Length: 468
Image (cartoon, rainbow, N blue to C red; front, side, top):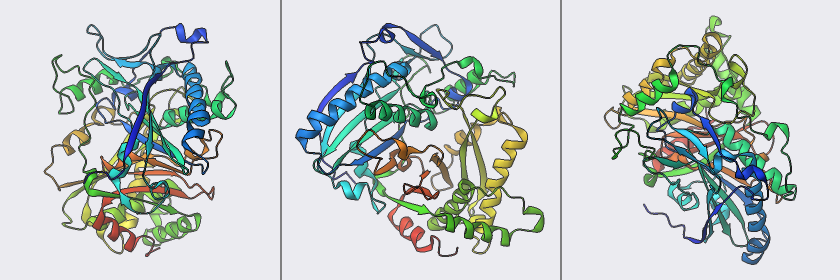
């Protein structure tokens, strides 16, 4: 189903790091670590930040909002030079590098949309493809790939949204969010030349802090695993292509919705899990994140229904910054996370009495295993379930992963016109993921984004929180 959202593109330009600073005249490069090459052929992550502004007439947008956003983006890139550059793969290099050279810049599209701003920025159900025209595309070729792309779209008299697409080989969600907060900070501060960023937003680039204690050279191991599996894009340069893998999802058939789980809901959920557990399992890890993932996964599996024999692969990524030795700063630039996955049968989740408790125990075991065994446990075979899953017959595998985190504080990205009205991870409609963020009302709840087939979404909401 094609999108009914009509978007007119008024400008396509390139925003370069501010030429007023000598920093922009310096070349800059970064090596990829094992945490980067792990994500080598993953499709990019797409986010939308909606801002409500009732006086956002085209005249005001073009004379005030857009110039401020452009100028602050240029100033922010001085602090984040790699984002203005590209992922490159020199012919004589064993792996790609992140490279910035003077005159590099970020692709920016400026657009206007006739879509219903209030509906697209609401929690209600609407077709997933309606968000696609608001998202920019990365520019990629065999030997070069842009790292981010940005689109600013005006909804006349309603507000605007900022769409950002990020190359997963270079950025994890934490770094992307840090960049957005930095851009917002400099814009709100008035776009002062040579303005410093707060320490927590100043990126830390030293790759020497990332140590691989396995002796396996994981950076090359993961890269070679991608190149020898079907993640490789056919090209004229052997396997060494930087073209982004296309999303293989079924967004045209999906609808989106957002739900919020409150602190009171969490209390009831924990009580429900513990009431189903034996005495020996009372030490379950039941954080709000773990409970949310377990409960939402259970509902999604039940909503699909069907045969209980299909495999459910569900999991999440865990931030490794506080888990490595030496500790990695919170403001480290790049990927620094690990994927945790579990394979189970659908029937275990569909058990009416014990499905949620089963899922909660599996999530708890994943978290506790990471704490007890460390980040690099089983590192050699981390990608195997993903490659094997891609070879499964259609319908025999259900994949449920998490994009985003309640710890990112995405609703703190205030450019000077107020906090975001809504933040969406658009790309969940292409890879069977859910999104998580902190609830916008500051209540310590969790906001969950869904993209499901319409009948599955209806089933999901028919059971959501009914058994809590």
